[in-house]
Length: 140
Image 1: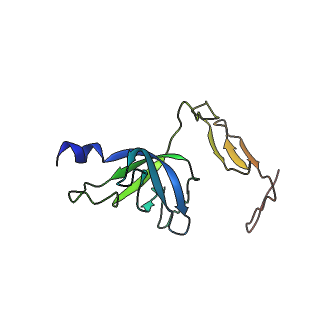
Image 2: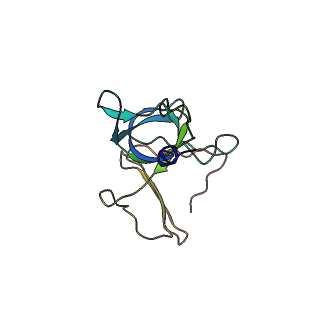
Image 3: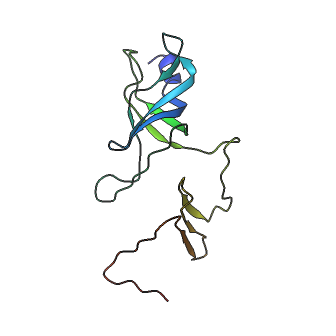
């Protein structure tokens, strides 16, 4: 494997389109041009998640989210085909809203969130309806 192939294994780009049904997305690499002088765009890449068998996880980044991708070595050099989106990350221009390493929080674009404060408290905020389903639900 030559140095050019190694340099292209990890890439940072921006999500340009998503396929929710396949949990995949295409990524644009503004720092690379294709043959027409336009930004280089990947094939549809699977998004790494926390589970896809018994334990299921689902996350599809929004368009324009900055993501880290990994590509398998491509000796034929015929495009960005075989790879994965490893995930999104914070940056100086897009810092995290939380700063406490004990907090776990999931916020979605509509403003809804679930926040675990690291002290045993859980806050759930829904911008619309909150639906709890279970054989028995105890509130105290």
